[in-house]
Image 1 (cartoon, helix red, strand yellow):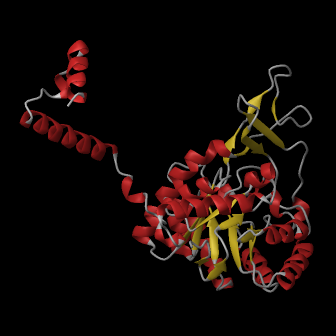
Image 2 (cartoon, one colour; image 1 turned 90 degrees about the vertical axis):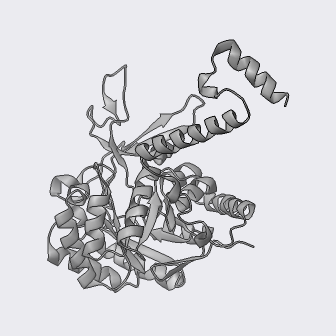
Image 3 (spheres, helix red, strand yellow; image 1 turned 45 degrees about the vertical axis):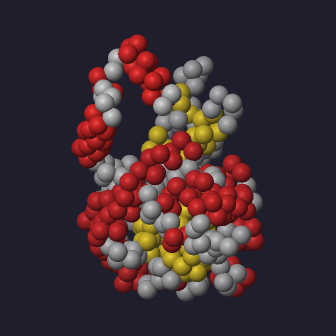
Amino acid sequence: MPTLATVVDGLRLPNPFVIASGPPGTNRNVIARAFREGWGAVVAKTVSLDASKVVNVSPRYARLHAGNGEVIGWENIELISDRPFGHWLDEFRALKDEFPDRVLIASVMEEYRKDAWMEIVGRCEETGVDGFELNFSCPHGLPERKMGSAMGQNPEILREVCGWVREATKRPVWAKMTPNITHIEDPSRAALAGGATGISAINTLRSILSVNLETLRPEPTVEGYSTPGGYSSKAVKPVALRMVAELAAMIRDEFPGRTLSGIGGIESGRDAAEFLLLGADTVQVCTGVMKHGYGCVARMQEELLAFMERHGFETLGDFRGRSLPYLTTHAELVRLQAARKAADREADAARGVRSDTDWTGDEFVRQSDALSRG
C-alpha cells in the first residue's frame, strides 16, 4: 500500500498536506483542530514582535464566482496577526505540549533590523516550534514598512536576513516568496544562498478583484475606499504551478537537498499531485480550508493515495519531480515537432502515401477514409 508519510528537512510528517500561514492558523484552538483533523503540519499565522502596529479593517475579503456560483478567486487585504507576541509564545508552548509529535512551523516577519530577526526567532524557538517560515511575501499593508514583499523583492536583503536567521537557529527555515516579481528564481536563490533550508511558494498575487458597477467603488470597499490585496484560490493555480516548476528546477541544479513547499489554489488530492510532480516536497492550503473546512484534508489524502495506487507509486519520492523533464523551451518544441513531421513524411513515402502536409480539402477526407479502411 502507498504511504503519504514523508520527511522534509528532518521533520517527519504523516502526510504532505500543510496548513498555510493565514486565517486557518490564527490561534491555538484552530491549530489544534487542524492537528486533530490529520493535517501533516501547520504554519501558524505570521507573527511580529510588536502587534500594536498591525491594524486590520473590515470588510477585508472579496470573492470571484464562476457562472455556477463556485468561488474560484479570493482576494484579501488582511494583515499578519494582530494578537500580542507574548500570547503567541504561550500558545506555541501549549500546542507543543499537547501535540509533541506534530510539526508546528512559526511564520515570522520583521523589519530590516538584525536584532529584531534574531529576537523573534530566538524567542519562538524557546517554545519548541519545529521550524520557521520567513514571510517575505505579504503583498499589502506592511510593505509600507519595508516588510513582506518589499523585502522579498530584494535579493541582497534576502540573503542578509536569511543569514541572520541562520545564525539564530539550526532548525529548518523556509523562505516564503512573493509571485509579484518577474523571475521568482532570483530572490529565492538569494534566500537559499543566505542559509534558508527551503522555499515556500507562492504567496498571493497583488490584485484588484473587481469594481462595483453600481457604486463605482473597487472591492472590498472600506469606508468607500479600497486598496490592492492578495489574490488566491483556484484561479491562481496555473501561475503557482509555473513558478513551482521554475523553483524546483533551480533547486535541483543549484541547491540539491534543499526543499520546496508548493502553494496556490490547492483544493484536492489531484491538485496536490500536480505540485508534487513538478518538484514540491509538501503542499500548503489556506483558501481551500476557508472554503471547505479543516476536514477537507481527509478527502485530499484519499484522492492523492488513489492517484498513487493507479500509477503504482509507493512513496511520494517515487513521483516527486517526474513531470519536470517534460518542460522545455519553445525552440525545442519547434525542433521536436519538425523532427516528428519529417519522420512521418518518410514513413508515408515508404508506404506510397502522400504526406499529410500536402493534403487539403476533399483529398484529405478521401485519403483519411482509405487509411481507416486499412
